[in-house]
Length: 323
Figure 1: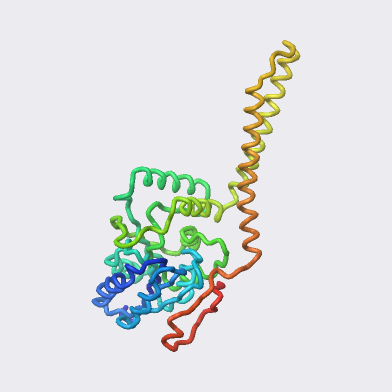
Figure 2: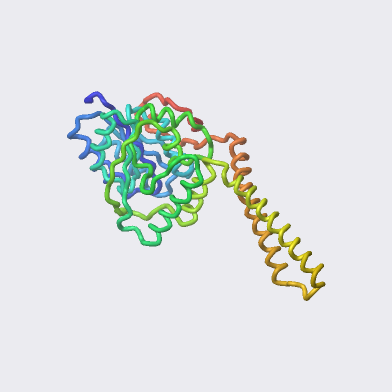
């Protein structure tokens, strides 16, 4: 498929040390194939010299395009913008930190040529700490027992999407986006290739423990209402236990009379019921908060500038970033 046009979408936040290295690696990989391609950097409001590096790359690499946000809107917004602005027959999503090996690109393209709409690169956990690996396995086991789509440990954003897959994703306009779930939700033909885990070459990870925890919560509540049903069952069980406890206590009083009050039992019951109520309210609050955010219908991102203005090209998507 020599006529195939590939779009690389690369979300970038404070990646000044990786931009030129990334471009060189992509050029070395793509030149032998003879395929046409573009490299679309989405600057997610970086506060270092990332945009300077991207604009500098325009001089040596005519394939470079960019979209720059007015502030940091998050990786999910950057992925959405990349998909909206990408013009290729197929789109390859990659991180800018070179943890997604460019040498896998020919395999991704080969999978597309075989007819797959999603060609997914799955990494192993080599190099991760035992605790991180254990927590990851536990999370995926738990989340797959809960949500309505299936997620796989090691499968992330590094993948090739056909134009049909991209258009399917762009039809999903929710504000609280969880791409891992969306990739699975659209279905289509998929192929998975495996690769060894790669450590970051420059800079530090942008994912703190708090952000990872929030991301995990997003995965649970974005694709099902089972936690709400769990609240119902927990409340029903608590009511049953409370009635059983009251009945047993009442029978004991009738038979034996009133003894020394069970302080520990009372406190335990109060704390147990209070904990169930607070947990239930917290879960309900998660859903109510998401409903609130959806009703505001704010754009996913705002664009400061794009390479289209620099190169004199027409801009094909709204600057406010709505799907």
